[in-house]
Amino acid sequence: MASCQASPRLNASKPDNAMKSTSFPQNPYYSRTDTTRLDLPDEVWKKVLSSDLYAVARHGETERAFTGKYWNYEGIGTYYCAACGNALFRSDAKFASTCGWPSFFETVRPGSVTYREDTSYGMIRTEVLCGRCDAHLGHLFDDGPPPTGKRFCMNSISLDFEPDRK
Ligand code: FE
Image (tube, rainbow, N blue to C red; front, top):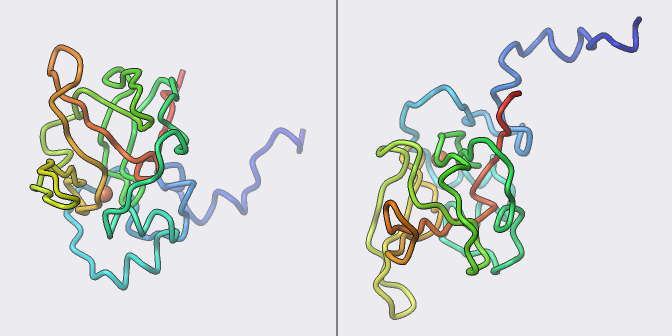
């Protein structure tokens, strides 16, 4: 029946559409398969990211605690960088944290993220950046659960969740 068929117009032009972000389809740099490092000027990011994501990802803003979409989310799947599609965390490394931001004890692979010392606000913290596009993701703390003892404290808006296929 016609009602059960996908529209050819929706699928014909972009065969890899399933690998693109659903949140920011206007971002041509987003890819979950291309791991080439991105080094784009600020003006480009400003054009391809939503204003809220741009503020966090490119200028280190922090969303308010308990306001993001993933802080208490328990879906099974993978979290990607919302700016570029780089795989960052698996849901089985996520733990219930009382801090109000989505928290993980390890990344999906060592090169998923990079680190930088952040001395803003009179504190010495470890900033966590996307390993592919250098987007600001959040901070790393040493008060996480076993086995790593680490807490990757992330902004929900910097993450893009894809559930596992059943
Ligand atoms: Fe990224």
